[in-house]
Image (tube, rainbow, N blue to C red):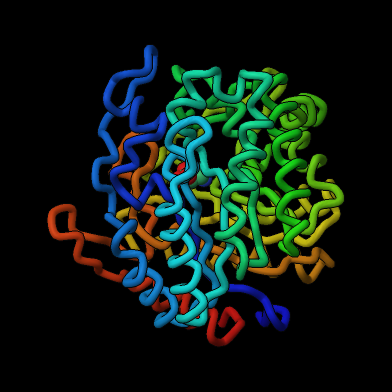
Length: 384
Ligand code: IFM
């Protein structure tokens, strides 16, 4: 199975999940019990210390044969206090961009990946009418990071941000609560403003949506359509006119007449409790391509497992589905695996998604066979 010329192959990460010490962010506050209603099993602490070890991490990615690294820059580091910009943080992320390019990696930068500065959260977060203005001001301030970057993701999984805008909501294993409509509107506004800002500097702008492969059983088609409308489709529709759309797919959600159905007892589950279902990415691509009508990147896809051979099986199955979408005419431009490193899965280190493991005390990196495997696929630009 050959992939199109110029197809990008890479892996994704998010700042809070790997950098460590993100002390000015609202998630750090949650992790240390300072947010009423929020329950977190384990604090992120030093995470993988990728804030200091990013060069080693990127080199492992590049040496394996991959060509693209998606990472996020951290608003809470760049603007730790309302209106005060850290030039040291901007310089840090510029160094990361330079390092990636020096290694032959194309950087894709995410501007917002779940975490907010504490001051932003205290002032209402995405519930505040000032949210889009505050976000746009941060994006303006971050522009020096993007000088040598073309692909920019404004907001990661706005549909999850809308769901998680209330701290007592955790990540569910089946279905999602509906988003908060006013938050959804503000996120779309913030996205459009960020698109204008980064396009002004010549970047290609998009955002990445958590696609959930809502699959109706017979007779539940309308229920599934209504279920997906506020949780997924509104965010895909908002990407019409963007330069690209990101699909982030892991599992499916079967929908019956009353809504999401439980995962059958005999189905294989991953370490996040989700059903093992590699073709989910195909459902996500098809929905994104038909609704947004712009080039698609798979910006996240992977499996939380301690069994790396199973990760390879999963990824092979997912790539078969990506290839089938391309064969059917979808304009898919790249595949970025989640994740480069085992990381902080929003409350715990147990679900391991990484192509690379690391020691919790020494931070020593141990690439897994899946990294080499994906690198070979990338070098061949084909799945054999
Ligand atoms: O770890 C998350 C990531 O932050 C957003 N997309 C889904 C991943 C796995 O849950």
